[in-house]
Length: 73
View (cartoon, helix red, strand yellow):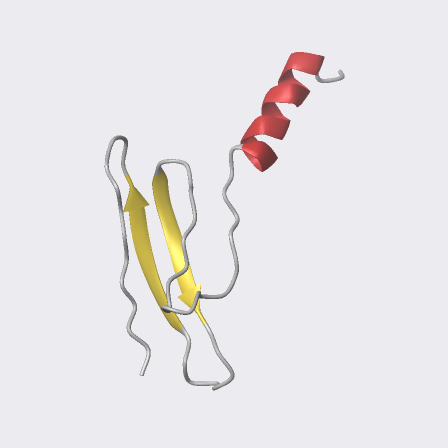
């Protein structure tokens, strides 16, 4: 049995288009911005030091602005 085109289209939306994958570097002020769909996101930091990685979770809710401050020394 083969999946119908509507199923394949929905699967593509859910697995690719409606997911948020963002990576980049901070700007001159140390800020990194991204836009995402509502839900929870795992944030990870890294730099050239092996012990510098930090992980944190942020939740985006409808109608609210969310921010997460991660201070690296």
